Amino acid sequence: MARCPDCNKFVSYDTDQEPEVDVDIDEDGQVTGSIRIFDACSECGTELRETTLDISEDMSEACEGHLAEDATEPPAKFVVQTRGGESKVWKNVANLTPFDSETDAEVALAGLVKAEGIEYRIEPVEGDEGGVEHSLSVEAEEITRDEKKVKGKTVYVVTVKLSVKCDCSPAFEAEATWTDEVAASDLEGLS
Ligand SMILES: [Zn+2]
Ligand SMILES: [Zn+2]
Image 1: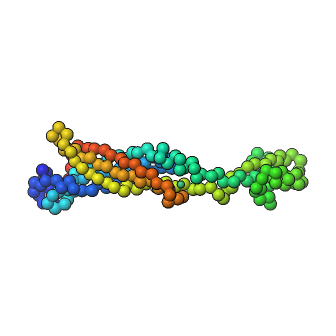
Image 2: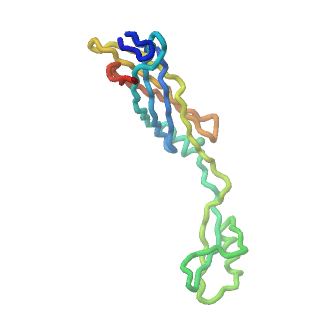
């Protein structure tokens, strides 16, 4: 029982309130977030007490295989660079677009008219084509809240089914179930 500030009556708690969940996932598959559990007034529905639990679920093992499998390296390209004079900075030789092979770059380098005191080199660079962009996302699909008695005290048990997907393909899906519990008496009054 509690006194509701809205009805101004002693009322029982309406515990049939679905928790509010907020979850996020990092690029490796670590899920973090929070879940807010609250009880309302059984007469008027005003929220009376609440608590927030942290959600933390390591789903990196479930994601690891997928993150590795599709991640084809973009094809390497090669550029011819120079530096010299005052400048210590390597710069791409103007008018030479990146080459598909090191051999092509060597041929181009051999054909250059080289100035004295200027250094030349061939460097691989990553192409910007090819490869798969992974982007994990997570959703709380099923949220349940039950209660049990532990030594005469009410304990709320919350369970969240986490569903992980990747932007690169609808074929990938990973799931985990996160659960935690909190004593009803640990909820804090809202008024
Ligand atoms: Zn009320
Ligand atoms: Zn992916």
